[in-house]
Image (cartoon, rainbow, N blue to C red; front, side, top):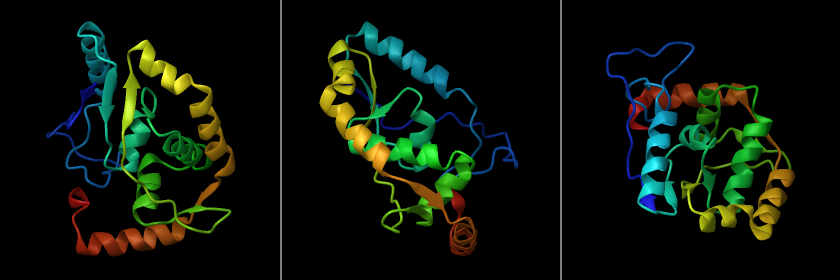
Length: 174
């Protein structure tokens, strides 16, 4: 397994905009090249016969950005991530990230905030690892959480808490 400890695809000369706002923990806008970086790593992993590559995204927005090619090794986390993406698809990536950070993404049935718990997100390369994600047990647990969880974003409260946080902290330090 190739472990991605840290990857940076930022443009130090670009500025954030309304279309691409600054995310928590982000210092510079991205270059928009992550898919190419991951393709290169995929080719490298398959050439040196590794099972795949792994990352532990530190923010929800990173997990969402990686989700097109990565799956959480834990099907519970994968079900929750996909349910959040399904239920909050009308919101921007920034709004979802701030919702998680401010504890204003709420699970409808419990009324409790959905917290983000960083853990292993995997891009499988080998048949063996792909088999894990296609297994009956993985799919069963994933579907259980994906179908059970329903979310909403308390947008007004998120904006209020975001302003409070930003009055005391720099966004890139979050």
